[in-house]
Image 1 (cartoon, helix red, strand yellow):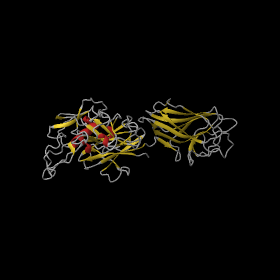
Image 2 (cartoon, one colour):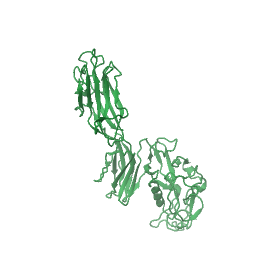
Image 3 (tube, one colour):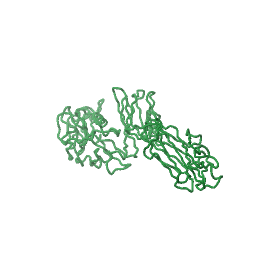
Image 4 (cartoon, one colour):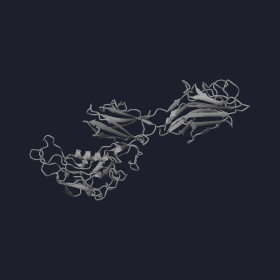
Length: 506
């Protein structure tokens, strides 16, 4: 069973908060050219939305850029990544004692938006090779793409509160001077960082710049500007990586989970209240007593959405999504019984279910014998145009069909047929696989169907695998194996034998 797992985050203090998703599929259009599985990188963008720079707390700006990244229409929401504002903040007002209750230290952009790999725009343009390159006062290209994928005007102003070469508060990284008591910061030392003497003079950058002014332009008094946002480090995983995002909807007090899905797979929402065990142990399926959270089929759109009431019993809760193979829509090896298949004939020898001990003990046969079912080791039961000894289909004429049970493909995006067959009939006889629309009892002509089968090895009757063949979807069907033959007056033939029939979602 395939088991792709993605951890999304926690429910802490009654609110949905993201935890690092950190993994991105190599076929995601956000992966820069030239990078492959195992490589790491950051994304950076400028927010299309704006706000003031009056807060001295970096957490406020981190919340702002994460909201932008996960907003409706954002090309970055499916990443489920954590984003950090490229901004420097004052912290507590100047003159506040470091030992004062609730003291908030200043934070530099270089400390908040930590760069550990190359940095790229969402369109693949490289901004910097590494941390040193990011903060040396010169970047490779303007940061001019927003979360919606739009190119932002070159004169757009961006709050940063930062210097160019150290990406810190005005004066960082010099030693922070304190008062004589060793606790009180020197007033005015962090001029121009965000939150300094609100609504004071804050430093801002310009979107169209690649020199120092990308982050450290002049200062201005207040106003509502955009922000730069840097992602956590992203690792390129396997092609099947699941990108899971969660949104809290206050109006309904619900959590909305969204993830990319693929046809033929099923999904479970798993959950745990801590990280003492890995999700693949696995965590339990999340059960709120209301919502179906297991064996969720892939949405035809390629994106699944699941809404659940916000859990309130736990202070913290983590979630993961499990991707697994769908069970076959039909899987029959005929060992236990006939599989619900039925036979009908117009004339001659009918199809029969049983042990294929048909030819080796009987008369010589130009086409070979069928003495076992398919597989290794061989199965003991199958369907054939005659079962037993001698097992030859009737001469001079046989016209008969083997029909599957009804298969419901009404909500399936795609499905495939596979089966094993042993063939032994001369030229002139016909073997055709047909698909029947149950609602109208008429044959469906679609793709490879009707599928004509020929005996390409007339001197043997060995088992071979057939398929996969794409089936028509959108309704209920039956599959028929119809054989028509006159045999040969000088030789005996086995006809057509069928085993190991499987229909799977594609």
